[in-house]
Image 1 (tube, rainbow, N blue to C red):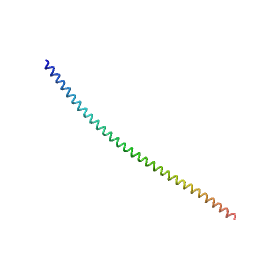
Image 2: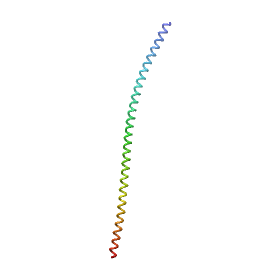
Image 3: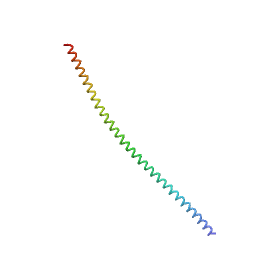
Image 4: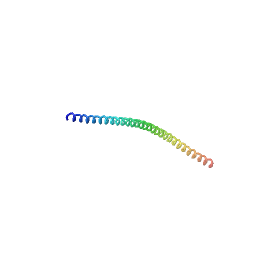
Length: 104
């Protein structure tokens, strides 16, 4: 009777051990899958970070080009204003000369 009970307990223990081995195997597979997913996500994050850094560089370059273009436009605007002022001065001088020649 004791032998039968011990044998039954031994079989129960072996079944429990086999269940634990299966669960350990399944957990190991799940862990490997999670590690692969983490590696993929890490790679995606690195790619995203690299693209963002490149976009920041591109944005900075575009901002610099815009600043340069605005500087050039301001310089050309000043040149045009000077030319317009010169034109008005010369035109006034021409009118004055024309009036002087008509009055003589």
